[in-house]
Amino acid sequence: MEVVDKSKVYFVGAGPGDPELITLKGYRILQQADVVIYAGSLINPELLNYCKPEAECHDSAYLHLQQIIQLMVDGIHNDKLVVRLQTGDLSLYGSVREQGEELAKQEIGFRCIAGVSSFLGAAAELGAEYTVPEVSQSLIITRMAGRTPTPELESLELFARHQTSMAIFLSVKGIAAVVDKLVTGGYPTDTPVSVVYKATWPDCQVVKGTLADIARKVTDAGIQKTALILVGRFLGEEYHYSKLYDAEFCHEYR
Ligand code: SAH
Image 1 (tube, rainbow, N blue to C red):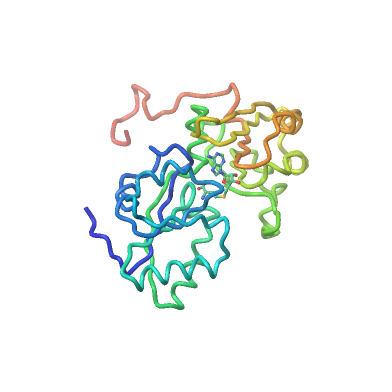
Image 2: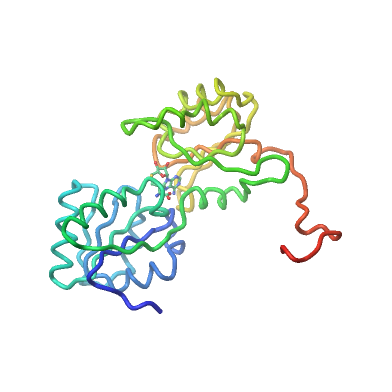
């Protein structure tokens, strides 16, 4: 088991919601934490039950970047184990980069502990596979441009040309605009779509439809946040068995 290095901030991926979907490594670090800064709007508060009773827990929803950094710096200077707990995995829309840059200015390093991203939790919730032989072999993870713009070459319209599987983050509020862009880009209107709200939480909700009717269904369900828009024929009826477990295929790759 890795020895914890208290001179560094530990960024821990909390998983999509179910408190059992944090990694064992993340869990162990949380158990030892003295200071925890968690993203309150998305993190399941039950995860904080893993912490010591005397651990200081701060909800970052009420803090701006400099305040978050200050808490980290103060903790490290007082020889405390500082954990930054963020939803899903850190590598997607996690703003780890900017926090890391600010810490570097104070000569503090960091370590990242991977988490289960919500797009994985959502697929598990549906029992679906993003890669179906001969139907789709790629997954595009993206978001619609919002307050944070997306580069021009990454517009939903351009991605839609591939007609492959897509997991769209941070965009459910604009579902009607998302659908417009996907259809303009090239997906047929009968392409299946599932919107998964709070994947792996007890109050998870799944809305299924096609590009023709999903916007209305999602609006009727009142879903405005914490949801993923999953698009593509991987959600449809068509499938083909893979060659991997074909009796005629050699075992080397299994
Ligand atoms: N790093 C996170 C994403 C952070 S951005 C991850 O790996 O999942 C926040 C967005 O993630 C939300 O707007 C929503 O689109 C998605 N999200 C996070 N948790 C979710 C969940 N349990 N179910 C569905 N979508 C979720």
